[in-house]
Figure (cartoon, rainbow, N blue to C red):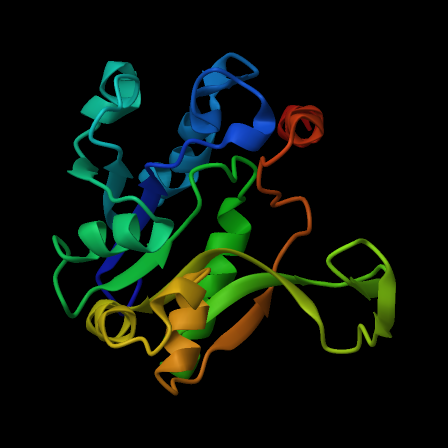
Length: 225
C-alpha cells in the first residue's frame, strides 16, 4: 500500500501538428483505442492512484465522447495554451499534500511496472523523481543552419520520460515562482529552477511519446507485444 495519496495528472490540451493529422494526436487510433485511452489505462487501473485529472482544451470535442471520460476516477479540467498551464490547472484541483504523477497524453506505452518503480523510489527517498532512459546514441550539437558544432559526451545523459512524480504543493510553488517560465519543458525543469533535488528512475525506452507519424508505427508494435 502506498504511503501517499496519489493523483495522476494528464495534460491533454495540445494540438500535436507534427503528426500531420487533422485531429489532436492523442485522439488518433492505435489497436482500436485512442492514444489517450492507452495512456490513461495504467493509471486508472492502478489500485493506489485515487484520481486521474485530465486537462483538455476549451474547444475539445473528442474527450467527453470517450467511455473513459465517464470512469469514476476521471475528472476533467480546462487546460491552457501551454503544457505547463494545463498541468497547473489540474494541480489546482488536487489536494496540496497529494503526490502527483504527471504523464503525457501521447505516451501510450507506459507500463505499470515503471509506474510502480517511480512510486517506490519517491516513497523511499521522499524526493521527487522522473522516469528517464539512458542516451545510447552519439549526441551532436548543431548550429541553426544544420552544421555540427560539437559531439556531446553522452555519459550521464538521459532522455526525460513521464510520469514525473512530485509533492503537489512543491510543484505548484515551483511553477508559479519559476524565474524563466517559458523554459519549463517538464515538471522536473520547474523543480530544478526552484532549487529542488530531483531523482532519476531508469525506465523502459519503449515509453515513447508520439510526436511524428513514424512514432505511431512503433507505438502500435510495442502495444501489440
